Length: 260
Image (cartoon, rainbow, N blue to C red):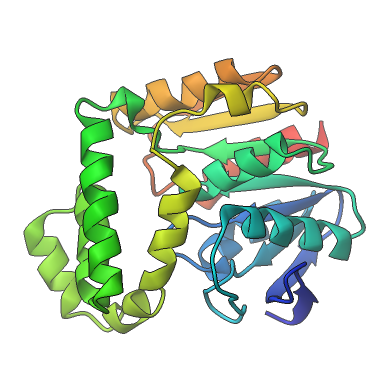
């Protein structure tokens, strides 16, 4: 990250800018840094000014206690100012939930797009599962058991035990443990895990809600519900894609939306 700006509470935010055209700030999800969405930024760069940043508590950005979701919205406001005050937002997974919160807060945006925000209303037993995860995650992090916190998140995503134990032995595990405290931030952004219909009704900008065609049916229902809950929503399915969407497929769809 070659640039820095400062959020309202004094937290330093690291970001980088590439491309030309309408500005789009890309928001990563859980267990991710700005580098995770950098390949997507590269796919947008020929038609958009793509802005990638490390959310607070990750990568090259700072952190300031105590955490509040409102501080992450203020981070987006600071980035918006840093790139000229005229931009759209895109968020993936729980990063999409943060984008929707920012849009509902009245942040002056052009447009907003999200990919597969995992609202648990549409998964059988989802609300109960979210409540158990929230409690176990809080305990693991308060005890300093970062590895256990990462395991909890990986199980929540549906990863099998054999793959989780394999991940523990991999070179990337240390990096995963390093960002484990930020799992609490994404958990806070998701709230109770359910679709916030009243909040979404306050979003005044066009919203594109995208899902992968090969993703589970409950994720399709969640993405469609987002599009229906906002006043100006569009629902789009990308054939053959999963939660790990290919930038080469998603990039042109987002570029069309943000330049339209």
